[in-house]
Amino acid sequence: MNKFIAVFLFFAGLIVCSQAAEHVVKVGYPEGKNLFSPDVVNAAMGDTVKFVWTSGKHSVIESDAKGSCKTLVSTDAFTTEAYEAPKEWVLDIKEASGKKWYYCGVGGHCGAGMVGTILIGAADNKTAPADGKAPADGKAPADGKAPASAAAQTYTSAYAVTAGVIFSSMCMAAYML
Image: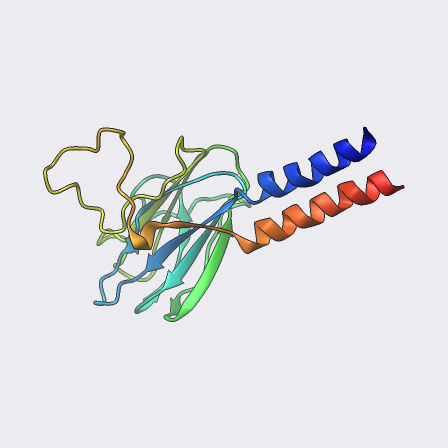
């Protein structure tokens, strides 16, 4: 019976921990546009949001409200320096629910609309389409979900799988003692 429980915990640890996703947000745009793409990301606790600089000089700064160009005053607020492309920066989602707003702090970018939102604890954990456009027919999909696009795919994080293996190994080691 104890072996059954240990094996069960091992596989449960792998399944639970491997559900974390990585959401990729392009910072800048190959044509030199100042935007985040996608500008809305739905994430869950344990997911990561990877910001990938694709052009220009940009920063990612947590703001106090949607579309605001004002830095959130909090010890937990995230911020980056202004970096030139290519650059990558990863934000770990530690909250179970809520919203995080962000903007580019490089002069004039936020005022021109370079802002974004992370919705935490969203129902279907899908990332919004990268182009931000409505379907050609103007109607929302019947299932209410945003259409998938190559840039908006979520990927299972190798770090989450590694964490699952470590957790599961600890369960097995505890059983052996």
